[in-house]
Length: 411
Image (cartoon, rainbow, N blue to C red; front, side, top):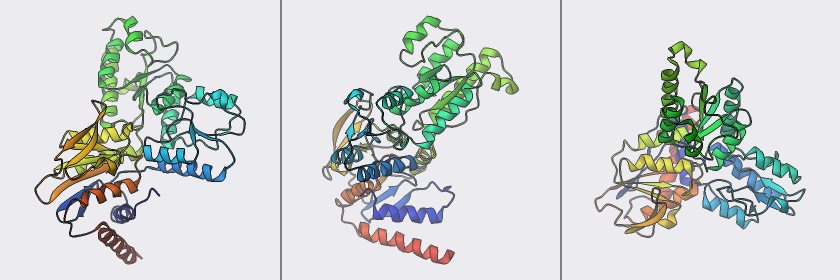
């Protein structure tokens, strides 16, 4: 129900043409009066598809059992509502506040761990309740990769710096898994990285650290000793460029602090490289290429609390008018659109958002937790406002025929 015939045909065509995924140019959907440029990479990633498959299969295979989700499966309201409608209950909200007390759980109940993963403390609560968690753990393997990287550098006595949003489920989980092995502190952006650098260089009163970073450092963290060797990992959905900038800045801080030569850097700064997942990298890279296309506006589709989607919005906003929506329902008419303003944290209404000139040129992408069917829904809604020379079905057939012909030539 989350698939789209049009999007599937497009993705299959692009896979055939670009097996190594080196071509980030967008796909043109030319409807005549409106031209839609679709990002090369967008929508469901492996981790999300895996989590959704496990969740719905669990519901189907256990009709007599109580089934819970720790929190939102992914940051997409439609998927979460679909699970609720099938009887799945949510134990916590996205902030970690309890909705259903853990004491209410009974042995034999099923609790699905979402794609973001969870903290060691919550895992222990589930085990204490007699709940088996491994079979229904949908934690994304790329999130687990970050945990493993943090553990690896912790064994070499590095303090772990996590670049992430402190209240995001994934960052809370990564912090928990890291803090059990090493002193850990979360920085949400470059501003906080600069503040941390000042403590490393001794330019700020050490005691102020505990107030400035309250709730973002591990228990027993000692500012005087725990920032002498550091390494950076991240929430997998952060902007790649931001993580790289923060890591490079903190590395230079260590070079300045200890007067390090190039060969000595590893003594103070761990080479963690990039811990962003492939889908985050691909989606962000595709948006950079998408923005090279002259256009009138951009539409970014995804949950308003989706971290990876919000970063795609940030990229688009730099270049042109951008509308962050959850579904085609926010497109009220050809004259009116409701969309989310991240910095104001509210939904607003904009009038006359579509250009009067023809052809109108629109860029479209979506976050990693957005179903393809919702992207097709937006395309269908938009094209309905124009006198189009082709239908969605026409374009689907064209992409399918090209893909079929290419396969036949390869064979």
